[in-house]
Image (cartoon, rainbow, N blue to C red; front, side):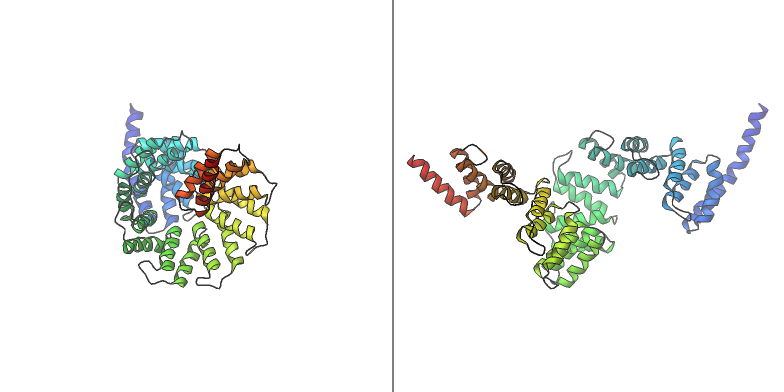
Length: 426
């Protein structure tokens, strides 16, 4: 009993001192004096103070006044996380998700995010939602992701709101609803989140879920761009290039595209390439265009891959190289780019860049045709008419010619009438 009483007395005597030290550490953090903050927090962290342990983790993770060390950060977060501190559970999940200071482990990330989410920590709910949306460490489940984003958004977390808006915009886990998407983007944008501001700008520009309004689009793009959001810089550049709600200004557009591209934004890189290809704000230079298309293509942007392939196929800005053209068309086609699928089919039909292969041509024409690409439909019809790569089948040929003709493709209309006439005579 005496030992218990002595321990209680010691606790009562040290608690106010510990509180004072912690508050001194917090005050030092606020004024940017991280050395003092560290010295105040560390003794408390060693004694097991949960928030002090978390703060030491933050200091090491962010490199505040000390060398950045993710491994040490992870060790302190682990201690606080095991004590049940939701912030540390979330931050430890971040480290496991990104492989910082620990071996990347999505399952471990999901475990710690779920611990924080169970306590209602909004950021952990959002992060766990990301894992469910992408199927990382857990089985992909858009409905579960939606539930977690909604819980996070309901607490006012801007990242949860923008994620919930994206689910509504794309119809993931819920029926597609552009108005609901715009509503959630607006909430996050009002909290000055650049991603939401950019997305809301696009909705106003395109009239998705809101009445089309170029001035509001411009306003939201500019807010995001001013914060350095790379895609917003590209989108704002588009407004200047096209003269939408502003005076057309190629120089300003190029300036914004360069800011975007300098951050590695592939759409900004593509946009610069197009400026050089068109001679807008710069002297027309196809070699320079090809350089920028390549940068975007190497980041797996299908449109850039298609444009680069076109340049190799035509020998524009680069030496003609059918093998390179085939390579880039294939890269874009495998991502579902319909025009690249058609172009790849055409190269196989003619034997450009590879041995002639009508079966491969038919395969890629079909892929394009099923996406309603008129030239793909026409070309597939032609193969069926002549029995090249597919069994000869006039009915199939008529069907695909008809689909392409309905889209106004004159070549398909001519082929359709000719085949119909021939079939009638037979």
